[in-house]
Length: 466
Image (cartoon, rainbow, N blue to C red; front, side):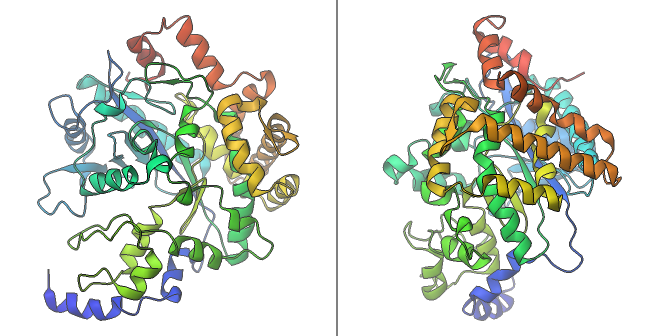
C-alpha cells in the first residue's frame, strides 16, 4: 500500500457527508431498466444431503478450481485475503459470477441485461454447466429455499474474516439473533435486481415492492422440510428471517409514509450499527456504534468511514426490498429447478410497465406496515391461506399475477422480450389456480415417493447434470 496515498485519502475520509453518500442511489445519466438476478443453490453431498466442506477433494474450493479451469474463468478472493489462498468465487467470461455464501451455498449472479429472456437463458446455461462440473466431484447443486439436512452445528462456514465477525455479532443479540446461523448457513432464494430512473421513480417502485413482497412470497413458499423433517410450516426460511436482527430486515416502514424520499432510507441506514469492514483496514467497530457515529467520530484507530465502507454497510441490511444502486427483491423462497425464472418474471412484469405498476400500487395502497409485518408470519405458516389486514392473501396474489402477466405481454408487444417470457409465470399461475403451493408438493413427495430419504430428496430437487 502507498502510505502517501493512504494519508491523502484519510483527509477525504474525515469529510464524508450525507451528500457524498448519495452516489450509491444515483440513477445516472442514460439509465435503463435492466434485469439482474441472483440464484442461490446448496452444494451438498449426494447421499446425506448435507453441505459439503470448503476444503478437500469433494469440497467447495475444489469445485471453484475446476470451474476456473473448465470455463476460463477468473478466481475471486475476499479483500481481506491478501495472500490469495482462499478463493471464494469465479468470474465467468460472460460477465456473470459464482460466489460462496457464508455457509457454503453457491450464488450465481447474472450480468444485468435489458432482456429478461436473455438473462434467464444465460443463467440456465451457466447453472447446468456448473451442476455437471460439480457432479464430477460427487457434489450436487440443490435448488430450493432451505438446505433441509445440514445441522446448524455442522454448517461449513467459509474462510472469510467477516463470517466470524457476523456470527459473533448476531450471537450477542439474544432473541433477535436467534436464527442468525440458520439464515447465514442454510437458507436459499432467487433475488431480482431492478433499476430506477429518478428519485420519484425510486419511491414509486419501492412503495410497490414493499407492499407486494410479502404477498408475492405466498406464491413461492417452498421450505416445509428443515432439520431433517417436516417443519410444521410452509416456509421455514421466512420464519428464520423473522428472527434475524429485525432492525435491519423485514418491512421498510418509512417507504410507506406520505412524503417518503431517499433521505428516509439514509436516516434508517445511518442509525444501524456497522458490523464489519473489509480490506487492509479490518478494524471492526464496537457492535452498537452506528454508521452516523462513525462518520462523526471515526473508528477510534485514526481512520474514518470511506465510500467503500458505506457501500459495504448497505450490504449489511436485509429488508424484503434492499435499496442500493438497484432495488433488490429478496423476500421469497427459492423454487425447485428449473423455475427460478418465476422470480424475475413476476417482478419485471409488475415493475417495468408504468400502467401496470400504477394499478398494482393502487390495489395495495391501503396496506399498512403493521399489517404487512403480521402477514409475513401468517404466510410462513399458511402460505396462500394467510391474510394481510382484511384481505385474503390469495385474492391479492391472484391480482398481482394477472397484472404481472399483463406487464410481460406489453413487453412482448413492444418487442423488448420474446413470447417465451410468459411461460415463466406458468408455475405460479398453477399455484394460484389449484391452491397447491410448492411447499405442499414438496411435503407430499417427502412423505410418499421420496420415503423421507435425504438421497432421494437430493435426486429429485438437484439441478440436473446431463
